[in-house]
Image (cartoon, one colour):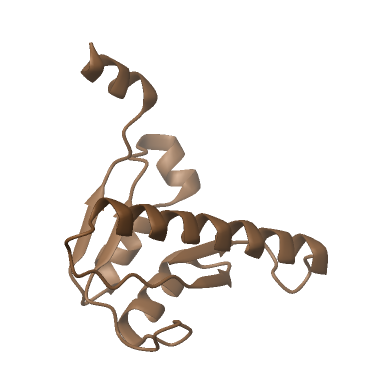
Length: 125
């Protein structure tokens, strides 16, 4: 699932909105293909949805719990999120989508931090 956070969706120029949706769809297609290739023996059902909404946490929870707006139109089994792990002033300014999802969803939640480039380089040496 990809939620595009756009400040005012209805104000966006049609071409900007279409470009953002096209890029998100390309990203989801690439990710789905990679996951299916890596897990050839697994029985995975991978679905992608693109939602344009100013409230990312609400959009994620609503889609996952109801399936409304999903290509498979059914409730999801799990929400998986990657978090930036911001703290202090940056967290106060930016908010925490993960924390809001955690406090509102009834679904299991898998939270991970992305591997930063300097961390992956250290692991290779």
